[in-house]
Length: 402
Image (cartoon, rainbow, N blue to C red; front, side, top):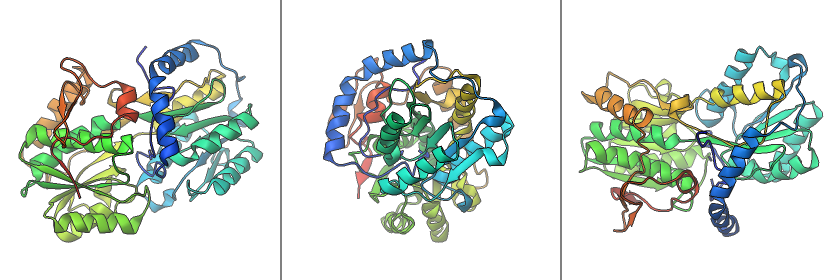
């Protein structure tokens, strides 16, 4: 069976996704804990196999009796970004399964740094009769864990984290680095200054963000070995002001393409205002900055939400964790902005896509050089899921941290 996710992902302070808005930075205690989790990855993966093969702890639920809770860090009504992308997945699931609006219980603008508000939102979902609750941001994780123990008859499905149990609590994420690699190719072909900016929610202590930046930089290097990727960290998943300021600083450094791993479209709108280009994240940010956005790295969360809720209806849901990729449609880039991408970009992207989907290329293959002169990986091998998701605390050779 294709390995879908690591039962216990290391992650440091993430998701921080949608994909993204995934959460807030963890402290040293969580970082140390996640190192311990890493050593358990192979065992956890085996446990995931057992879960999938095992029976559900939950009886079928009549579709008309089903209620689905979803906790958002932002407001999907913003029309772009992390929470919007997750909610589009919920909307897709609702349409596919024929659920009524009254069967979807949304709790919006729940800051994941506030455990009291998080717990209150989840308890309200439970009181309203939700059989499954999707918690979409990283720091909702511990509240999910605690309430899963208190309410064994409710399913808690947590996005971007690394914790789960054997009964009613799982986590879900995906190989977003595959899409980031493709977007790096787009950026590397477009830059004229050979300086590409990247607004990062978290620093090297967070593997999700750092691995994404590395995959982007690997894509850049494949088509433009002379280009550098300048990373500016905001230390927040959702901070419109800091995201804008980071983009401004990178543009002032001479960056003419701005990528991002943060929640709002502000880096793209700032790029458009400055007359440069960008690569969006979470949703199609060409809608926000049509003159600047070359493409966007996106999630199709409906892939996971639909299958998870269908399993609740069927009585087949288990706490198996989910780690999807480009091959099952969870991650991708949006169609290229043909008016502004460099000539030949589409052909290069399709070549790279084929390598990933058909030829088994995993982005983090072979020996990789870091920006401090070291190497990671081994010839003829690839980094495993656990390392990619929770063990990348280094930057690729062409990255400069600002």
